[in-house]
Length: 449
Ligand SMILES: [Zn+2]
Image (cartoon, rainbow, N blue to C red; front, top):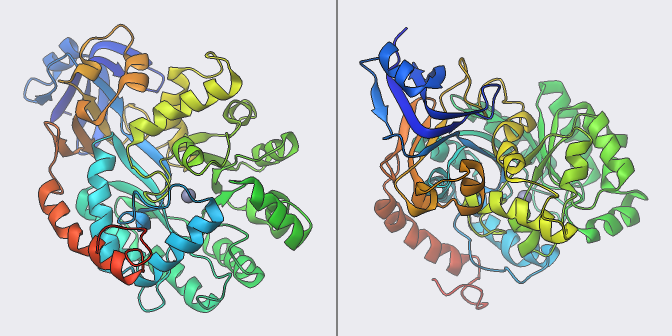
């Protein structure tokens, strides 16, 4: 079989059994990786293939953003000084009531540019807003599909506080599962256990078990969550989830910041995966997740940006760097985690956390061709160690080309599936309308509107 494309780099960091290859390339045909090896050899075997890359750059698997909320795509840069509960009440709640399917689609397309230009090819999303008038979460599916991204979508709106009937919310999960397809998979979403009434929690878990759905949730993000759960159920959320049978389903849990040794052992035993969100944890002052202990217990830990409203960026390179920085400064030990580990977390380990590791996460023959080339920028242009340079010095400026499923979605540093200038133009009036209708402008939270 002949390759259609060779993606060439001075280094190819496969994150798979072939390790790190110098002066190498990835050969691609039919959207899949055909072989990975020395550029000279591959060039000889595939003389007709188009070559992307001049041999000076660094090639990696596409990054897996293990946790975000594209429903927040048009609400960035506000509320960063609020603690989690107040942020939910003042920003997230009012936003949900005015968000439309069109907003969700256009916001997703806008952030897709930011995701792709920081090397993300797969995004694990949870829609956390609820609009009783329309199934808004489906806007994310069409947004991701039109941007040519791979993803997993879930709906994680909450019903404590009386907004939304349980039946209506369960219907939206079903509708989203049907809407997903192509490169977009589906998980059952549970925003937080505490945000749901016991009825939604129990019926939702039963529905997921019945349908064979995996689950995406948040667990033990803040210390306040532990006290609230203690007051409501007489136990911490993880113990309550175990009682409800949640961990009998495949679960990826955002955060796991406040977990003790017994809880880490339980999560490991139950095969629960964790999505670590260092930037959002720092912005909200939530704490530092015990990433080394989680990984030592055998838990797959991916890296997420978290939502655009709690980060406030979808720049995955920033999240990767901060994953290392946060552990180092917390442990007062620069060796507590290394660059190679965080790069693995952002690629193959994130894919494993989502159950997608047979498909993506590393550059291996037979996997789908999700590939990033970093090239033509100061940030990666002079290399001693490609891994350290990428993790601590990487920048969207250096993202030259991105392929998802073999399709080139970023070409010469520009996203070609969504035009950046046009998308900004399309989103400005939406942001102004949201600022007015959600009351952000009147309350002085937003200067748009
Ligand atoms: Zn989150």
